[in-house]
Length: 522
RNA sequence: GGCGAAGUAGCUCAGCUGGUUAGAGCGGUGGAAUCAUAAUCCAUAGGUCGGGGGUUCAAGUCCCUCCUUCGCUACCA
Image 1 (cartoon, rainbow, N blue to C red):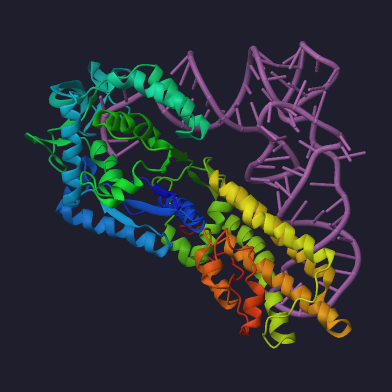
Image 2 (cartoon, rainbow, N blue to C red):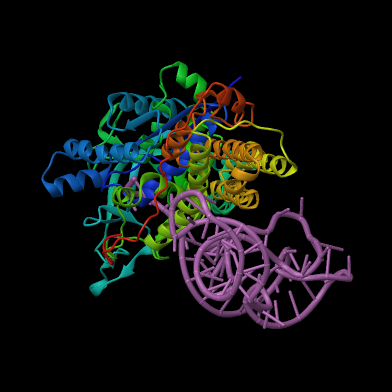
């Protein structure tokens, strides 16, 4: 009955503390995961940290610390971020876990058994200072004929023993797969880039390193560690049990969606599928490359000093305000711009003024005029029917459709339209005036609004889970109707007849103010 | 250089396979209302849909070209 849904974020590289981009990805993925749960799917949501590789090792050495020690600390920040931001992950995976090493070695052996690994030499222009290889075309000539990397550091021709993966063998199979599965890569613009890249020809991939040892040891070649991406990508399957035939593994693989940043699309749409093909495993159904967040339209970078700490933002504006802003303001898949002004404006307009105030004014009227008891419905007028229909349609049809398409900003746009309709209805019906002229009509109006507000709160749970839950709790809405299938069912009358009484309503969406200190790190 | 994306009201953006007077939010302006977090509602603000050319009965919406911005063009992740 309930179809499994497996979704992942990218496995973050904890070379520094999490930034707003990590938070954005986690929040977006969480909204999708929560939506699917409310939509009746059995969800597995995996996130985690990719802790191997040269950079972690270098960073730790630079700090004079044990790499493992640094990894422990940095990974904990990412996990803490998820907890703070209400990210409903099922597994937080670390590539340093023993089980992950086992899984990585298992997939390695599968590639090897399939004849896709061979030992050779990797030759190229290597910069000792950057500890990276560069393509001939990237180099520039420095003084005295010294070749320089794009960073301006000297490079020298270097030869290193390395295991290679026969990526070239998968050129055509990948293209065939893309053609046969048009929904595999999204958005389309990313897909075009990948297809062109693969059509341009694939070279075999160096998948082991001997220059450092912070990684997963290559089976049978103990002086080699696996290329970090091979190891990192394997998280998606080790998280649910691979190579063991666990219940989760059987249920959830292949993944429904990998949510990743647009910068790592290639690893997920070329290397990962090729590895899986070689290992004889099914491929994920979709890879979605989201855009980047820009600070006032500019890239965030340490040198510009405009890097935003998501924890600081959450504390300043509130977790749900941040979640709402990011998902409402940024069209998922495209780049988006962030600024404190934009957050304050958007959240105040939508959550505080429109929705929050709608709930507050309605519940206050019920609290004052009905002693907190839910009013009875004395026959609906056409206006009531129209509103109920509009809200019902938005909640049970339009929003789910947009969520299925991963169009969270559009889901919220239609949600707001329903909120506007409710506010317009309040003003036209003027229940405060009906109190004296037609108390029964007032009750019907308030009951209608109560139903609509509850449905709107149910619908928006994936975006702002904390405040939506508090509101639904205040309203006494039963747990079992807090989903898309049952939001529109007849739960109101039983609740009212059961004698439920609301307490003095408290505001859930405070109006935000711009931080006094301008030019601070936000 | 090659490939790709974007350029729509003051601001942020919607506009799918071409079709009535080009839309929304925010902001601005003018009203209404006072239940509510001074929140809400109604009306409105005359943007050559980057420039030019073309296809069509009809084009932000297709084709060509030019301009501007951005991304990708593999082994740091």
